Image 1: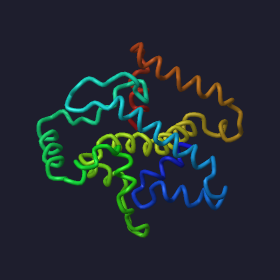
Image 2: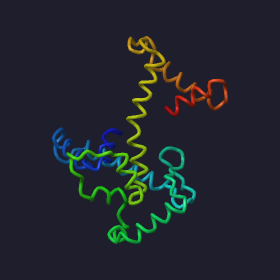
Image 3: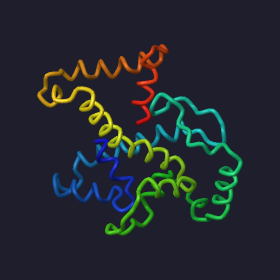
Image 4: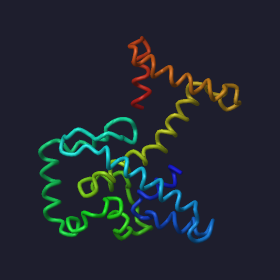
Length: 197
């Protein structure tokens, strides 16, 4: 589900790409596609409800349990946001639509274009700040999973490949690394290195 939603944040594909392939797999108007669409908009609602803007405190109901803050608190960023809002007539006229809906309605970029997606969202964060926050979090998930798998292989080597270490034991080891870092034990520096790599 989360990888399907991640496709939506590639401006070359968006939700139309998911719809196209779900029609091929399940037929038109499939409940599977409606489920993905429902989850996408429900997740966006969580981001909208917990979004921190202009340095104000977030409202209750964060998607991750923490405040979602994309750092629009400094004066330069705020001035840029205000300038953009005052110049973008279409955006102001469409305030009743959510940022996610506005993003979906924009023309898709050329599928053949060589696009750096993180840079695209960095440049679009002033136009769609809530969607950009959501895209940042969703698109980081595959990288995070890859880093965890690589770290697991580095730590346990062939034992993991031969399934000699149960998954539950592995998860417990990772949780213990976090606990030790919080208690300030001697392995705190190791866990900090792990968390930042």
